[in-house]
Length: 288
Image (cartoon, rainbow, N blue to C red):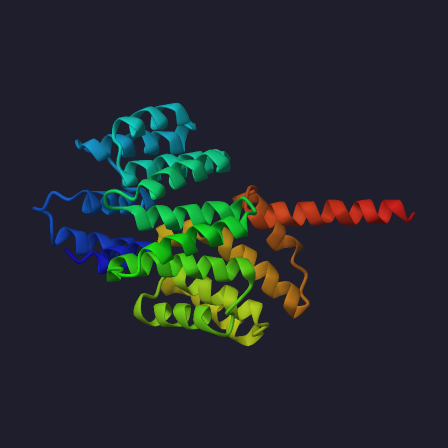
């Protein structure tokens, strides 16, 4: 079965389109279809309990998102040994701040390399390693997997293309090359909040202020604001990019910083700003 449109829809943030592609196979029992169906529903905040083996792991994961109960996810995931179940466990561990445990969960399953869903675990492991400040580990995970898998299906390629993209972002590379063209093409073929934000980040990295401002205006247009689920989900990232753009334009961004802190105080941009402000205060205090 070709999962390309399903996976591309999910990873570009076009969750409804991904669900429509899945619905074409509604009489087929397939764990990959079930995984992406439930992931899309979670992203759209439309998840409901489902009666399936993988559904039990999703039920525990959905409850974790509300309560923070990691133990139940771990217990149920261990009883359903599949890459997709371990993916949910690693997601929960990462959200809980247990990056080392999350990476170990991913790596164990990647090393076994059995069943479907391994490329998704590679993507998650790369994301986790980058978030943990271990870019070299992320690079190693990706390179090792690619070296061992020369013949990839198109639906695996789209997942691994995002791996490569995140590595480029982490290293600040290919801002005018392959990473830029990747997001530029996605914005044409699969336009969404996620793809537009990716292109916005690359425009900012190149100091292309007019182009960046045009994307911000587009995302604040009625068309994108009417996509309420995505508009709410990606608001913190939009605000973070607006702060960067505002600084580049020479504007006062204090109000935007306050708004971001109110919306998502745990956003990486807020953490970095707080850490940098503390360092600056220490330097100033040292030379008073």
